[in-house]
Amino acid sequence: MAGRYQTIAEDLRQLIAAGNWRAGEQLPAETELASLYRASRPTLRSALDLLQAEGLVEKFHGRGNFVRRPDDRTVYDSARHTSDRPPALRVKLEIRQAKASAALASLLQIHAGALLTEHEYVSLAGTSVRSVARLYVPHKVAMLDCPEGPLSPWGDNVRDLLTAVGVHVASSAERITSRLPSAEERELFRSPAPVLAVERTSMDTTGQVVEAALLLLPGDRAEVLFTTHTHVESRGKPDDL
Amino acid sequence: MAGRYQTIAEDLRQLIAAGNWRAGEQLPAETELASLYRASRPTLRSALDLLQAEGLVEKFHGRGNFVRRPDDRTVYDSARHTSDRPPALRVKLEIRQAKASAALASLLQIHAGALLTEHEYVSLAGTSVRSVARLYVPHKVAMLDCPEGPLSPWGDNVRDLLTAVGVHVASSAERITSRLPSAEERELFRSPAPVLAVERTSMDTTGQVVEAALLLLPGDRAEVLFTTHTHVESRGKPDDL
DNA sequence: CAGTGGTCTAGACCACGAA
DNA sequence: TCGTGGTCTAGACCACTGT
Image 1 (cartoon, each protein chain N blue to C red):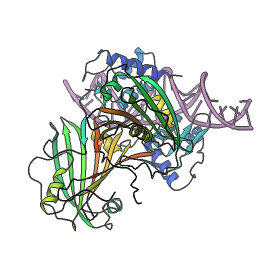
Image 2: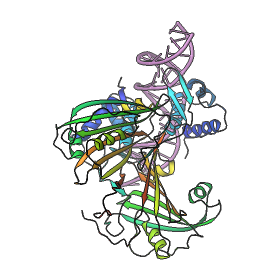
Image 3: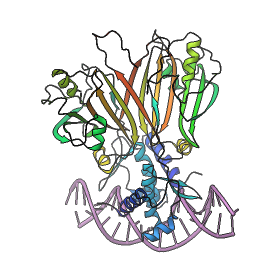
Image 4: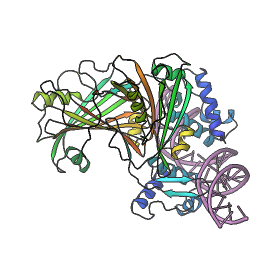
């Protein structure tokens, strides 16, 4: 049943758990490990691939394989309050003017090619990227200034800017999917672990979409949190659709 | 930059997109594809691995490689209403009595080993598993009957049973993570695509945890949806939806 | 049984990083 | 330069599926 590489992976897992190598420490070279296990290098590498995907091992081309530090997860809390911003994350912001792609046009319910402002927030814990948030606001909804004060990893500053110009968000829908990272994303996060993608649209009281956001999180270092309060009533209310 | 296997993968991607093979149709054997591309079989296989992880191709040991049918995603809508879900999903239920593991004890805020009821809902679209939901209710909160009527893929029947015995859920917290499937999960979902894991705890008005749920979704065939309404002071109570 | 994918070997050469 | 991981080859044998 269990192939050679799975057996080796399990053995390495236990060695790491037992502390044979400390966090951040370098493993023996692949050729050396292969000879230790009397396996070929491709076989040993497929074992390491498992550990890498699990987040136990980090590979560096030309340097070696290292035991990953089990750092805490970054939490994207949808019901976050503006006061308690996540700590210890360095946030960088870029602002661009762009035209709506077909996908964005559909999300924002505008026509493709319409002008919009893109805010891109990238947050880092140390040197590891913890989130990428791209927020889009059509020009016809508002022309935004540059945010002041501390930056939120999730781009909450954009909502503040909207409020400042009289645009109020009444509801938002968030769609969460999981997939493997593209080549670029794999390089950005330095990990082949799956990514959590959050696609958010925010609407004002009239139902007009005033903001769309694409949030990307490394699945092995982040999680999404939602808290909902049930309205305690009879629950027979049908919704349209 | 692009290795041989990535080039082959890209070519196969385009051939599939162009309709060289229909959905559900079998691809040529790996040995044949390898000779077509003048590549070794391991190289060709790593190209197929990419397509499989992307959900474009399904592999069957002993039968062949097939183009996957792009079926619609199953949506886990957190703000769902129990009455109006007409999912074309077949749902199976198993009920067990068990003792709380350490992890469950922590979630349910009870002591490890305490007795609880486990409801396991498995939903299928055709032959493909779309969700696994395991719900846990401590005996000291309630002893549940067997649910009647149609089964919800997300185990909402448990909440109905709780309501029936006078236990009302006031709020719930859902924690969403993404990871690669374990060997068992990979076999269950018949896919190495990442899984979406939802960990939910529901509390009554006193803050006591009355239910914990572990929900597992195949990342390439399911998504999670959240809708939140921003609290606006001036309005009385949210009326629509 | 024949045909398929799953795994493995024992090498080889290339690309990258640090000294 | 040298040691590292990244990729590739051309076979081989095993396990599974359907006839």
